[in-house]
Length: 588
Image (cartoon, rainbow, N blue to C red; front, side, top):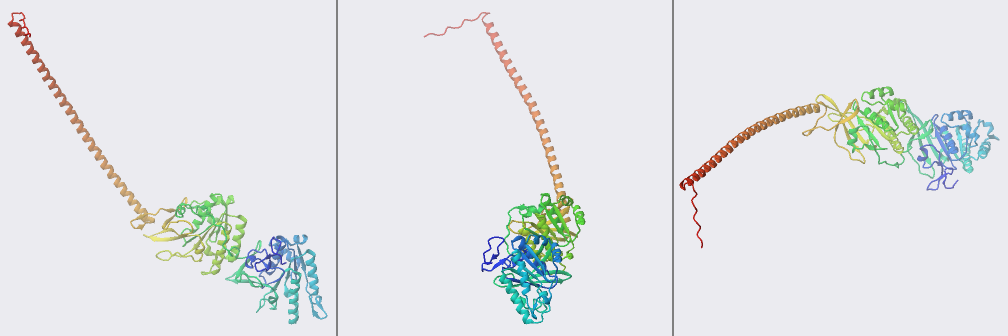
């Protein structure tokens, strides 16, 4: 049993050299850092109804089915038929495991006369019977349920101590990993107060009632040779067996996606860097009643379904029918996604079950449906107490689990408005765990209530620091653009009134501009007419001038002609009608 665990069907070995047998129970192996001590006895004690038999039986079933370690279940109070029937409710078929020689069930009816020899209490007969069962199937695991029935009616404390030590030593010598269940004592972990001292590992189970809600707790009291979680952890008995919580909050090793996805509200996506939030991240929406938290959650899952993704909406205030009807008033037709199988609406009252049961229910649905998006509305209704430390731990496990699954989560939380401004607080104290945090508030100004939204934080991305007005319409939820007037941000009717004033002023200014343009056009027309008249007058005067010039030119030419004619006539008359000879030009 000291071999190093290299395969699934071999015991694990820690760095300190302590071999361990994994239980296969979700969460318990993380708390014990690998499982129960291999080849050693473990004591599981607790009051009636805390789940001792269930834990022991699942330890055997998981060992036989997942780790190739057959087991023997020896019971002293419950018959074989009763155990088989009870375990069937968890989905474990013990009859089939018996047929496959992976499990041996043995009901021992304890009679003191059968285990006494010569007047002394002796377990030799039990050892022979148990040894035969172990050898018949090659068992590696053993469960004895419960040890009180085995030692009933033994008044001698010294004999009881000796036989207990002998029983635990015999189990160690057989090399089997054993679980011995025991009832809780009044002043000790067990009725006799001895078993916890001889066991190598002691696990205490507790079933308590707080505020009429039942919860189960598990604590590893001691674990020889190994480190282990020492806190008290809640655990559940569900459809798939026992789950010890936290399952995923032991280490922060989930992968962070770089892909961005829309929130379903265009204005909010713009405030978150224009691309929405990171896929697989967590978004907290805090706000007072009536600020629109449920509508935002509905928009979130509606956008996911519109992309063809699966979504689950957990609502603790409205029934499914009421939610579908109310969301139709703002244009969100969620019923179509429900009919297509893309949306699962889980509507329950918070008081139906405890925090652990709610958490286990979320785990089961997420594992069964594998949604890309989960919305919880609201988380503050999961508890009736104002300051419930268990709620923060539960939500921490839920957030870690969804991140490990790669599921994007939106959680709403109810807060109160403190006059005159909303207080940015989360009543459940999980805001520091969230990747993004939005605050919705009601602002009363000018006799009216206005919804506002602001991004308080958003890790890993740029985001707006503005306060935006949050409105509902027939097409869903949207944000109104920031309206600045001087050094103020106007919202509601103040914004509408100022917009109307601006529109009226712009209209009046436009009319004045049109009047001025018309006057200018008329002036241009008048000037054009004057220019045309002057051009006409200039043309007329130019014609008159040209005519006068032509007339004067003609008169001058006529005078010259008359002068030449008169001159010619005078020359002819002086020569008697002959032409006078011209004098010869001088030579030389």
